[in-house]
Length: 173
Image 1 (cartoon, helix red, strand yellow):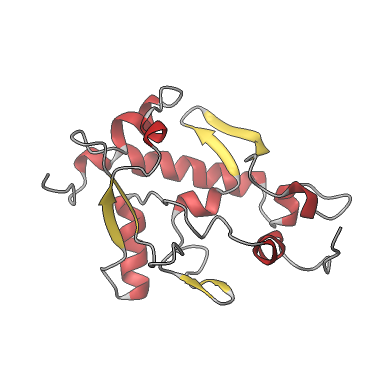
Image 2 (tube, rainbow, N blue to C red):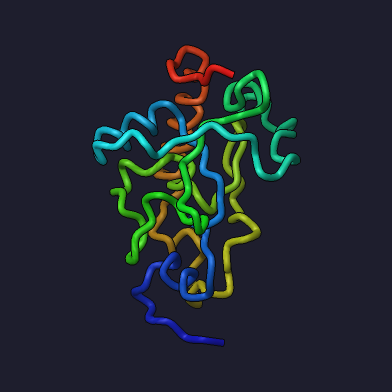
């Protein structure tokens, strides 16, 4: 197994292995995410409305809040970060995300937690490379992510999702 400097954050280690969560992934944006990113970047060309690449993603029966508020009621479209032609996130640069943590989409900040409106799963997403975590640490420590911070972002995400019906910006389909 390859060894890595302990001070490296897990995302850097993961990127050395190949495609990461910042590539070829559809990242849902709340309308508040859009506002934060637009204010920081002075751009408005980073979103699009799309049907999920994976049709199974529309089935969210384990999270009725997500199912009801994230998807446009006609066509199962939802607002996502636009990707570059190679599949990378629009804001992915050579050294990682170009957005400061406080501006990044809440979904990105919460990765690799899996969650529903009911709460966070204490285990990381199955696609997170646990083998890269240094001995004596868990995935979240390796990401420098505390449970308190994750819980705050989770609460903020669902507060913003619940405001989606009131938000401007639903597409004309």
